[in-house]
Length: 315
Image (cartoon, rainbow, N blue to C red; front, side):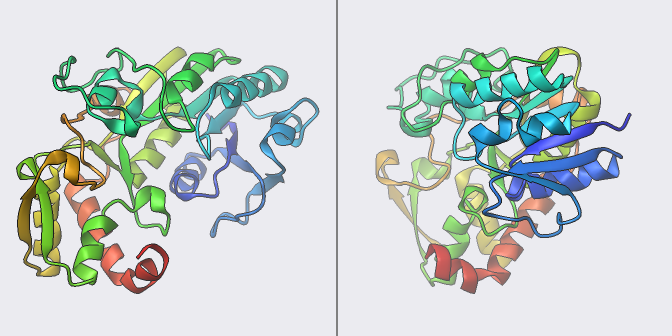
């Protein structure tokens, strides 16, 4: 059934990946954002401009739009205060559903693995893959806290929480360009490849299009009440396997150099593998696309084709 959907933010990679699927499903979509960045291809939508506090407050343009569904990616970092703003908007606008994009980093296992600047534990405590009922971590060490955001989420009878892994996708945005770490080394002619622990690190990745499909599907298929779902590829590469795939695709040869885990700072360098259970994503939300190998190859190809611009911006 078509609904009025207000996407808070929506001008970044995730919005651009989600909105086409929402429109294809027949939903009416508006974007609420500061106006400092406009998304190419989404000009036909209604845009509500303003700073977050004013945009979502009482008597705000967002309240006046009377959305049935609110989607929030918490641009700039998730906090309890932002969740409370969202809850207040949901209550005053009588929204039926809130879809919050959180992160796989909410789990205690991720803290044990050293994600988000946590000191890694020698022994991980939780079984893999991580189900949505797995123990949550404590406070984060950075300027955002998805655990606190999730705890503060309220205001609508249907609360849907999506927890993506490490997102990758074809956008000039450092949040989705982790694979540039490897492709960029090839572009710079660097054959040396620091390889900790044989390249066995695995931080569960997810194609940007899969996240967009998950957000759009949640509007139609998430169950009533509070529902959380991991959003990750159904299978993934270790760091070493990903490096091998990059080399094969770009006809390159690495010169691996074994290094201690603590001396390598690649984007997937976790002390213990981070793997998410994706049963809810596949069975409840019905999201199966795209194929992770094809999506990864497309990412590598896109990075290589745009290497001059990426080198200029990210080195």
